[in-house]
Image 1 (cartoon, rainbow, N blue to C red):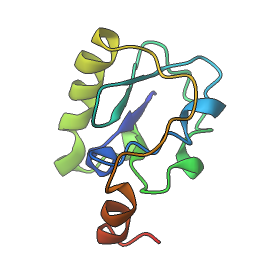
Image 2: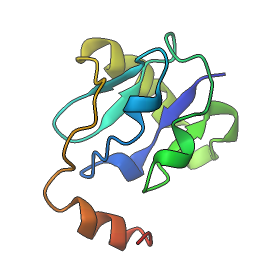
Image 3: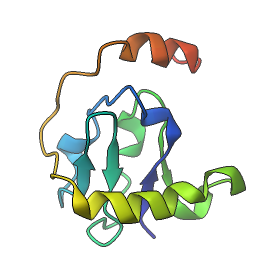
Image 4: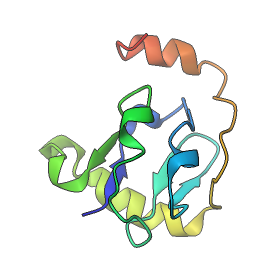
Length: 102
């Protein structure tokens, strides 16, 4: 089962996760990244690298987060692939702190 990027990524866009992806399944817009579920091989290498705990295996999604599965599936293929770490968005550290991660 593929992994899914959830709401915690929004307005952070820490991209530590993308460099370890062996199949380049991450795609991004100006506010966040998404995982293409067709390309994802479910290796899980990205999960421990997300500093805001935004990435989950689809089977582990809570009911409140299930909509993120479809959003990733729809948005990812329409956006450019992100293969290299990028600078986090302005305010990303503050958002990370507001989510309870230091």
